[in-house]
Image: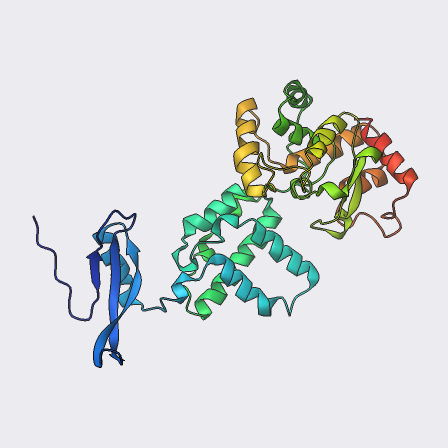
Length: 353
């Protein structure tokens, strides 16, 4: 058996712990002597740099630490903690609109929340970009958030390298819903969804197509804001001011809304255990598998484009379409005041598609 290489004095140590552990190697380095009053003697104080799966991995951790020492306690700070600390001062100097933008970008990073910031790599950041389903303008905001957090982290010695610089969003330049080449659901695709509408998660896609709401607006819809007997619901939290609106429930999808509503959960749509659907969970566990099952190549936002297209083809007035989908900057204050007659007009419009 090969002899274990002896490390230089003061370099640190990599020691295997007893028992069955996922990371059995403890990586430590001495930080000087401290006086132990109880024992009345000096003891060597050692800091724990971390734990490794293999001795080789542990030696690399030790080498990295010796090359560029860092505060071990700071190395445990999570992505979520960095964001919370950063925003305390940042949010004092920016507009409410920018705050909403940063919060929206942060909500796409759920997979990173509990990860130690120092341990994140380019692949982790790129995965968020590649799987969040956002368009190019939104991805630009997401990358700006990464840039800001890394700038803050490096300034405060939380991490040694800025990986945000290398995040690639250029390949998504054509993913913009404001461009004319929108990827709408075809009539054949919609008919296929109706054939399988006994599946509750296919129902959600149809609910999106026939309401025009953003997927986040539907997932965050609370039962208390659904007026099921009046055939409409209220979006009270949206990414834009124009998004705060009343949305009609078309007759075609009314049974779906009524079924989900009857479950009695806090949120209209929910997981099987009644918990709130988070976007990442919905997209990965339900949307993507259904797209694969039916051979579709759509993203959730395509449902919104489909709604607008169907309403336009049905000769619905432009101002009515604006009210239904809550287009950014599309409605004046006067146009956003809803009356009983307005709801009826909106219902008549969606029942034409």
